[in-house]
Image (tube, rainbow, N blue to C red):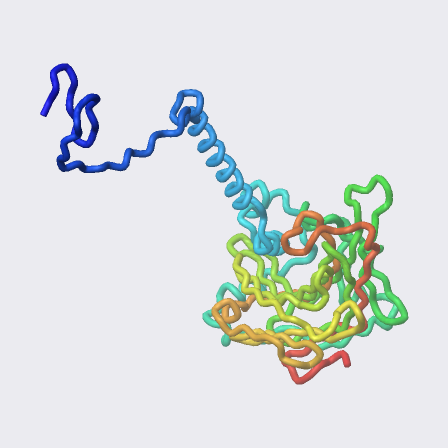
Amino acid sequence: MQDAGFPYFPGHFRPGFWHVSCPVRWMTPPDRPTPGRLSRAARTPAWLIAGLALGALAILGLAILLGIGRPTADDDRAIAAREHPSQHTPEALAAMPAPGPVADAEAEAASAAAASAAALPQMGEAFIDRFDRADITNRWFISDGWSNGPWMVNDWRASEVELTPAGLTLHLRKNPEGSEWAYGAGEIRTHDFFRYGYFEARMRVPRGSGVITGLFTYADRTDKLRPNEIDIEILGRDTGAAELTLHENGKATWHKHRLSFDSAGGFHTYGFDWQPGYVRWYVDGKLVHAETGGAAQRLVRPQQLLVSLWGSKKLGAWAGELNPSEGPWRLDLACIAYAPSYSGPLCD
């Protein structure tokens, strides 16, 4: 039905006409956009979105790079042991200071020619040293006149090794004004070399961030081999733990042992028994850890026994950063001893 000049829509009334009923489908009108929602002024420009996305990616990338580049505790341990890859470039090796006495040619030749650890003889004579004499240099070489590297705050000085009525003290304290290194520290090592046996010290360690006490045996690098080392290290930042480590030709096998006491609070006995195929660590006469894997089995080179106290501001991920307000520091040694095999504490 349609009227001239006026269109008819079902469901609507035409003016002046009676509505004729017909099927009507009522429809909900679609949502209309909020006025201005899609206007040019309200849109975020595409270039701004792209710029924000690129900026977020750049920040994320920078955070990842900073995380990758930041040294870890493992990196710091490797640096302290001279095992970090950065220390084995030709330039780094040429600049490395002389370490003092090194193994003799006969001992190194015997190690290189050995077919197995079991085929090598034990080396070294037993001793117990309570430092009750005026001169210790018949057994001990006192490090003097160099530093191990820039990760340390100190050089080694004979003046920082002191005999006392209670034994021997290694100091870490400020050097005189104008010194190349801010601090001087004490280190001793045996003249003799040892292969296998039980090594022990009774000592009281210092407390303080960035301070490291080391009792260890050491075989220096040769033309073809990196250092070998058996460690007990106590960090001044955590004197309730001892770090027990093997360093074998550039690789470290590491274990952290929680002590039942504060090692800065009094004297305790620490030792390790190195035998063909294994190393066992003891604290106050109790076995606390053992290594029997490949690293322990390959330890065959003669080593010297060393005790040292040193500090660092650059190995913070591992040892913390040295805090000058906590110094000076001292490591007190009542006794150091060696026997070809373990049969109980020697210094008690």
